[in-house]
Length: 109
Image (cartoon, rainbow, N blue to C red; front, side, top):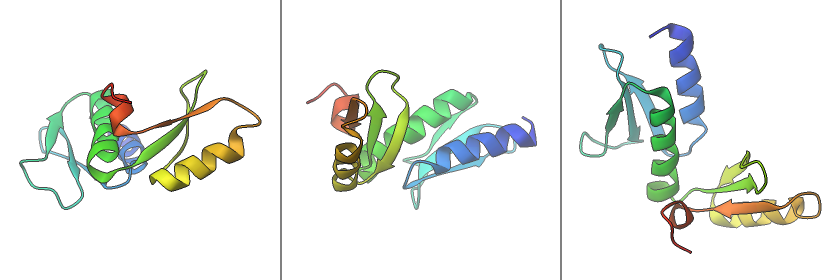
């Protein structure tokens, strides 16, 4: 894996609070909670899988919420629940935005 690819993956994962990324000597991508141990680590060779797993770890374990454009699914803001709800309210007059939590990702309410 090229150094530039590693930088891109690292930057993408760092966008998700509470999650860390590292690379093994065999170019596997290791995603884990900050301060996590091997029991919570996830290994993959696929960048999209690593980034998706980091997002779910952040949503679920850390309690992060997202504000996304309802039409394009573009990530607009990421943070704690109250901040996301406040941020969504400031955007509401312009576009239709949704707040995403771990429960909505898993199919809950």
